[in-house]
Image (tube, rainbow, N blue to C red; front, side, top):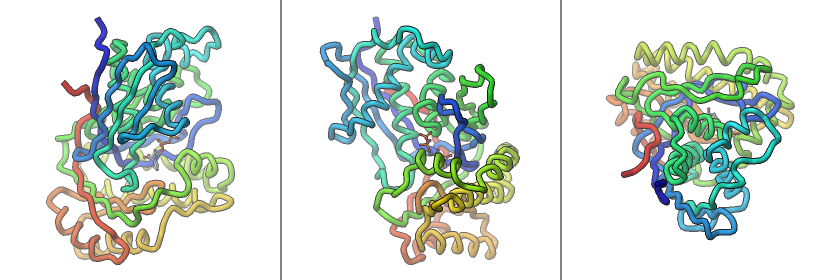
Length: 344
Ligand code: 2P0
């Protein structure tokens, strides 16, 4: 008998090699490979309850009814989890929708970290939802299928299905089989005592969302083709450095990936600048630490916060230095953590 209710936990992830850009033709396929670390310490906890009596799915985020767009995305993910749903979407068949037979669900989700902290909540949210929906609906899907499903709703979410160091390959253009694209684990969380320290520079929500920002970059930035051409080699360097536990090689490739992604966005028309003054001052502070001999490197996502990659032994020194920069409101330290899982 299928359980009528299940709860799952998932963690956000930070990309050491960035995803920025999609292939044309649908299926939310990334144009570049990315490699992230899943972070313990911050979590989304999501309960899915089968509720056949409902007229439509319900989504409650942090105790409040979600906006229609968010609810529709959550419903789409549940449709893909339902037997036959992913298969119909991957084949591109326009036939009857298997998910029409899916019972309605009530989804309750809660983040234990602030959304404005620059840690993409969509990654942990959709990863937790994929696992909870699979258990509650009795779909019994493999982990790779759940990663592919989450990736279709938000690419970075496909990575949070796995713990530790995780790669989401680029799609192979023009091949129908490439529509199936799960992330893969590169190394488990205990492979390397790495840390990520976030320097939070604002409590405000970002002005240009990631999806919108990358589509605008692809459409208008003359640097976008150069970004797509150069990203695979940088991602390979990130992977090799992770496997070798080489902090200098990892950090150099990680900064290069982030700066190249931002350069492409900045060169769009009009340019997208995610940074504020404190972002730039924090980058300088990180490079200052390096001149003093400390192995610390930055990465920046689609927002103004600076994330510092270092070894766990360096966390206290990094936090003290970041906190001394005017405009750095607070710091959050995290370490590699596990993939999404059902809570017993
Ligand atoms: C990343 N980001 O690799 C990059 C770096 C932001 C900057 O993945 O359109 O929410 O839903 O697939 O996954 C954020 O974008 O985008 C992201 P969609 P997503 O972490």
